[in-house]
Image 1 (cartoon, one colour):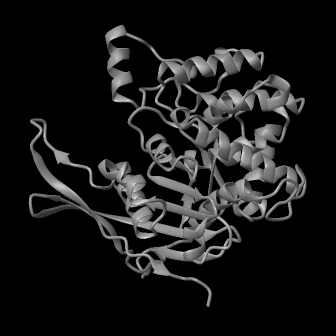
Image 2 (cartoon, one colour):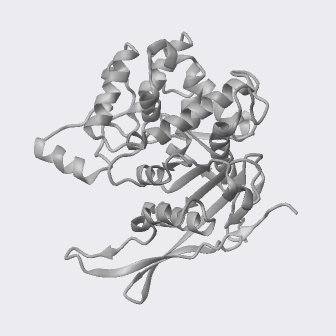
Image 3 (cartoon, rainbow, N blue to C red):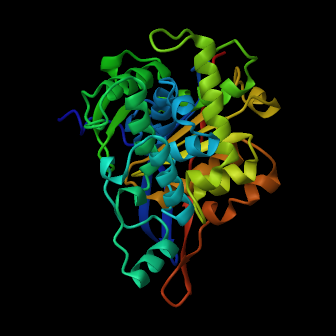
Length: 370
């Protein structure tokens, strides 16, 4: 028997129905941790090795923040939010990317991300009508690339080849990501993302841990931290930088994604109480600021939630995330109701007739230490 065949069958996380017939079943994994990294709840395999994709952007942005690039080039909170974005390529996103490039004394030709169809259907229709050909500034990852061009210059490295794994900036990024996940550098695996930058893979619970740290930083008094940081920053400086990223994303959620997108709707609904970020092929992470609800769940400090859907289905991913917030009773019923269209999306055909439904069946198991 092969090692793959001997693996236990993962539980079904969601089922799509056409009429009363099962059309598809979807396997997913969930990890819920606190700011100390303790696993509190799980579903499936909470240690599944997971390519975080764009859910890792806040960690990549931290490496840029710690170069001093924001101060050197005059980047503001909105610019920092775009550095963490997988945006819709709306005009506001493209224009801000251009402004960031100008601040960083760079231009579109310096970007090593390519143009692609936008994530927004409305934007795509507008482009088709204009016969518009997108360039690098239109990439949904353009803010991250503009930030990295600035970060490379801030450490005295060349702008050229800033995207390559052995570039001095990417070496710093790799070390920062590993630190945030509480892993040695060689425990994080790296591949190439769709936007041409290195992208990390690590256990799912470490993605939850990363976002718990992000949220916990906002609750720490100035000059304190949640752990020891060596190399690039002191513990207190890193905590302040993480809090800065959290504030940027939650104050400018429209820049992190855009019209009609789950990340934007989530952070707008919860009004600063949590931060959330999607990764391509159906990974998601949330950090919830410490409050009475997180304490009730047994969390020491903030709460981190990470989800991975095996087949990469984003509709299923958002339904599961919204359902988890209800299970854990995060926020108010009114806040969660603003995500109802994602939690129970209507499945319709081309004539608008409802043809089926999506049912989430994630039952979290408590792993709270006794």
